[in-house]
Image 1 (cartoon, one colour):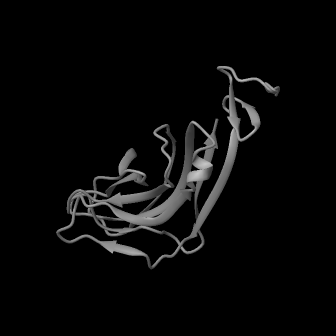
Image 2: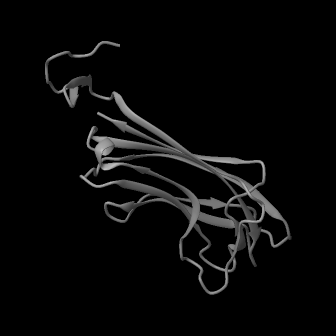
Length: 172
């Protein structure tokens, strides 16, 4: 890979006095969350409300200022107890700071069954946040069940030997 040195153009970026080619990663951080089979949310009247999974990462304002975008990658294990009609859940990557905004929303549609048991899924995603400001940037993975028919309960940090991860990369 070659870079543009001592020059600024459409294919470069400046961090301090250093010049980097566009697309160059100038900061990386990773957070992990160990799984726990006892981390359970039972829904009762709060369907459609998103709850924090515990997986989150923050990028300092100084590091966010180094780039033009932040790439977030995540992988998180969930367990879903079937509802009255199926096993289904929703999750989203939510930026809490500098302003609250959903960056990605996904749905897992499981089997159409009321049979007792837990469906195990891994929620994964990659999101680019190009709305950078001068504040710290905090990203959280959140989940919900929209109705009693979808999921009666969600193990939001499933299972005891899992390692959930979230990675932030600041890109020029």
